[in-house]
Length: 235
Image 1: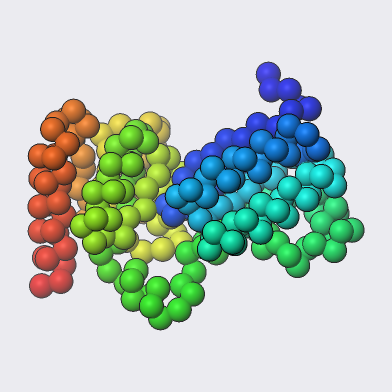
Image 2: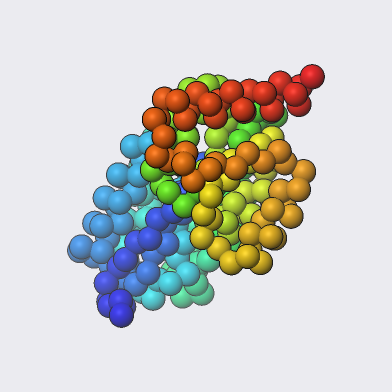
């Protein structure tokens, strides 16, 4: 059982957004430092971060200062940080500290993710108007390979290991194509609901052999399938 006096951080990617779920206390010392260091590590290659505070039992002034510094460092890295599921006692701390306007807070993870997906201008709308792919697979390694492969081929790629998060992504933005791994790790009912939500998408299923084939051959074969689908859509 987790020690409620300590801070644990659970991180997952939902498309281009990274959610960090904080469990425990955000207080002076190791807890504050671990949060700051964790987000700094994420900022090496991620720039859209959500802090889920629903399981935070207590936050002191040092912990609040850490979150403020984390927001600043994220924006200095040309990213942004949002808060979600802020419990009442933490919300009161923000109010008493006159910091409510500093943070973009949301009632749910989905709302926070959707906020990152709202187009900020014509150029972004144009960039995401087509050639957008959602990849869902249990393997983080496979997803990392797919992200680099498809981005280098000019596609806008969004990845997740979880069907629940994939459902969120289908609600907050539009995709042209779905790449689905062989084992999605969910109940039959959840898989059925997911594929129903993706009924208007072309689906390419990654066979179980994809992760064990020669990477170059597997990637080239996949790109040919994707190009064929995209060319057919634009014809």
